[in-house]
Structures are given as C-alpha cells and as structure tokens.
Amino acid sequence: MASAMTMAVARPAQVPLSTKASKKARAPRVAARAARKANVQAVGIEQEISIDEAPLTLLREGGEDDADSMRARFEKMIRAAQNEICGAIEELDGQKFQEDAWTRPGGGGGISRVLQDGNVFEKAGVNVSVVYGQMPPEAYRAATGEQGGGKDMIPFFAAGISSVMHPHNPMAPTVHFNYRYFETDAPDGAEGAPRAWWFGGGTDLTPSYIFDDDAAHFHGTLKDVCDKHDEAFYPRFKEWADEYFIIKHRMNERRGIGGVFFDDMNDRSQEELLAFATDMAGAVVPAYVPLVAKHKDDEFTEEQREWQQMRRGRYVEFNLVYDRGTTFGLRTGGRIESILMSLPLTARWQYDMQPAEGSREADAIDAFRNPRTWVA
Image (tube, rainbow, N blue to C red; front, side, top):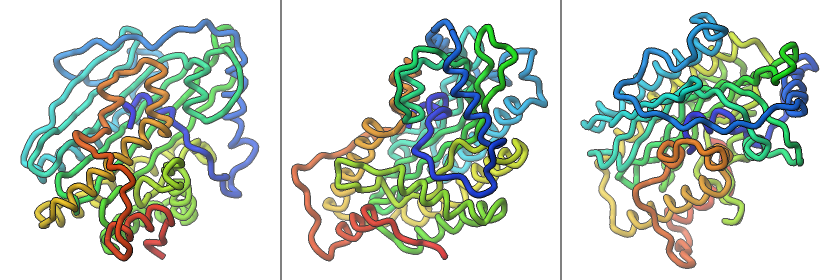
C-alpha cells in the first residue's frame, strides 16, 4: 500500500462500465487525456514538513476548497473514517496508534497512524492524505497502466484514506482498504479547459487459512452496501478485485480472496458516489473486526506460523512489483514511511515450498488461484 496520496491516483485495469455509462460520463477522462497535451512546466512533489498536531483541515485556504466543495466534504469523510476505524482497532488490541502529521508548503499534507507490536496486531496502519501537485508522465503511466511517451504534466488534487492491518495470529486475516477522490485542474495557460474527476476504492481480505463462514461474512457485508446503491456493483467490483490482485509471476495467484475494488468512477453524480464511498468506508469495521476478534486467540502450530510468513512474503511481492499506488509513490518521491507502511514486520521466502495435497495450505492456494463465489 502506498500513502493515501499515492493510492489516490492508483487506478487498476478497468472493468467495463455498466450500460449507464454514456459519452457524457466518459467526458472527464477525455478531458484528462487532453490536459496531458498541454504545455505545463514540470514541478516535483514538495517535501513534507512534520508538524506536532494534525490541523483541522489539510486543504488550501480559500478559493475552491471551501467547506461545501467536494474536496472538503471528502476530506471530512476520510478523517471521520480514520477516527472510527482506529478507535475500533485500539479497542480490540488494547494499544494506541502512533500518529505522525505533516503538511507541504503549497498545500495539502497527511496523517499517518501506525500500531506496531500490539497485543493483537503485528502492524496496523491507517493513512489519510491530501495532495496538490503536478503529475509527471511516468507517474501517470504508473497510476493508470497506460503507455505512451508524452512529456506534459497535469495539475491534480488527490485525497484518500488507505490502510493495511496484519494480525499476529495466522488464523486471523489481513485486510486492506482504500477510498479516494481525484481531480485534475485545468492546465496552466488553459484555464477554461474542462476538468476530470473520479472516485475509487475498495476493501479486500488476505487470509492465510480459508474459513468459509469468514469469507461469506466479509463478502456479504460488502455486498449489502453495494446493493444499497446499485445491485450491479458487487458482481462487477468483485470481478475487478479478483483481476487486480494477481501475482503474475506466481502462476497468477491472487494476493488473497478479494473483496470489491472500483475506480475511474464518474458515471453518476458526485453526490451519489460520495455517498457510496462513505458507506463502503463505514463497512470496514463490521466486515473485518469481528473476524479478528473471533480468531485472535486461536491455537496454532509453528508450521502454521511459517505458512503465514510465506503468505506475507507474497503480500510484499505484490505490493512492490504490481501495486500501482506503491510504484506511483516511489516514482514521485512521496513520503516513504507512508508508502511502505503496508509491508508486514516479518515475512518468509522458503525455496520451492509446495503444500501437501489435501492440506489446508493447499486449499488456500486453490482459493487464491481460482476465485470462489462466497455469496449469492
């Protein structure tokens, strides 16, 4: 996982839009491509400045970032979600998150909260970030997966919340989620040009061992939220997650058992999509925390701990090799502690490890290679 800044522009390979998508809905993406052709002077991401306490807002003062703007409303949502989720994790673990906050001279900043070596969690982190910048072409290609040799820059705004949580117990699953909002500004010298905006995000589960009832609870909770907004969302976004979290060099093994993932969403109003992102962020605690509470005290063997460490190694491989948010952050010089916060404290790489036929480990590998239907 990258920082919330980097994942805010990380856009996985797209699943086609529903039939509701129209030429009007696709217009912002066309505008984004046009913006890349503008003659914009390249500037780097500004170095962050550590501060003692998080400010009330990370937005620039005045201008378009007033309290009624989508930028301000999205920041309010993700900061409330950070507080709620961290509170639930602290109650389960019994230890507190460490908080680091920073700003940048040109506006924006972030808040990282990390709980490390806890009673229940080996490592858990929840980042929020607000960024103003100009996207260099190589970073844009990393974020979108597009090819091309363009040299122009796009001014952008990105805000998001991103998290990964690794429990100690091998029977308790890891979770990842992120929710983000992205805008491109008009390029310098082309103030009248149309702007692009989109929402993205998702929540996915990475267990070391498969518990069918846990998977059904997790997917069912996410499906309930999706169905509230559009019954087409869950099947579409589950497929998207299954296709994104693939470790290609491991025989197309998935990182885990998926969940939902969506991006480039601008085929309906901002109000509708903000409501959807808000409800999805609100589903993290009921979807995930009961699973950890259920398994945090389970007995396990040293061999099962080693298997968990092997799966953690796969997690590292995906994040450093394939995750577009991580690669985007590394290429733009983002805050490295936030970019690499997703990595576990410990992992294992064992030469040519093959699980025994019929074992629980073999069942897990099968679930990772062949995505299953967890809810109807």
